[in-house]
Amino acid sequence: MASSPGSYSTSDLSRKSGDIIAEALRHPVTITQRNKPRLVLLNIEDYKRLMRQSDVRTAGTIETIPDNLFAEFEDAVGKYGQEDETGQP
Image (cartoon, rainbow, N blue to C red; front, side, top):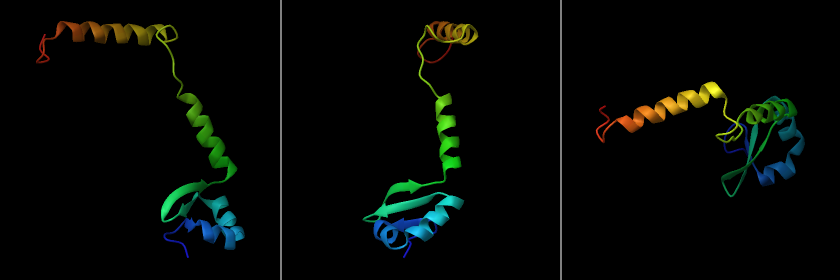
């Protein structure tokens, strides 16, 4: 039996895989093992959406930062350097 809606144990997965897959096509389903969440089953559209969103968050270097953002960064650092320990100029 599921511990909460959309949550099933690994033994549930082996016994009711068809029902669980059908539910995962509608919304993400959590699979637990020893009462701890271990896996999430989700439909391919949700997976692709998450992957597209994660592509936006990339790491960069100071050399790759856009000029306008770098100027704002320099400004902030300059202002910070002019403040004393209390945050006062």
